[in-house]
Figure 1 (tube, rainbow, N blue to C red):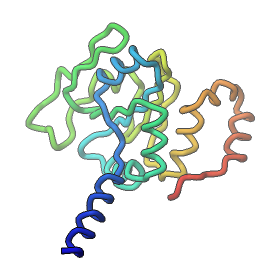
Figure 2 (figure 1 turned 180 degrees about the horizontal axis):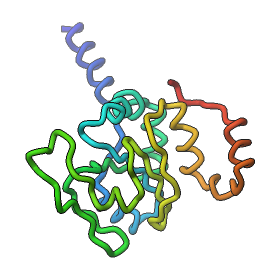
Figure 3 (figure 1 turned 45 degrees about the vertical axis):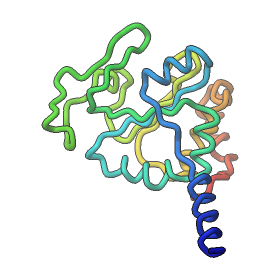
Figure 4 (figure 1 turned 60 degrees about the vertical axis):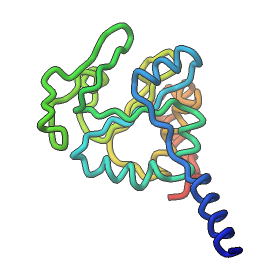
Length: 180
């Protein structure tokens, strides 16, 4: 009986300690941002994209990445070829040529992903507290590679980097802390 109790406690601890990014829809994040201003982190992905799946498996499962994103951003997982309706800055974005028969393969690009300038997957977007695009980062990133951008745009550090030289200095002096 003691062994079963100990096993149950250990299993409970591992379930409680398992963290996940608190993903929202774009509309949920915008509503939350209106009530409590915070930056938004958007993962623009597609269902057929191999590097997008690697980002989920290797980077978005990393405890350092999870903790940083959950603390500093409203996190949005957005299917760039999906059929979600998004109300952004008073305009409605949708995917009028979305084909449900292609839900698990390539589909038409969503108007919101086009508006945000996304033309490759995965792309992560950083949105400021007022809902304006700060920047987009294309391609797969490991936890330490994503950390560079999370810390740059998750804080207001990006506002003080106004030249290519200043950005290069930031990169040269950056010491990753996230485990890869």
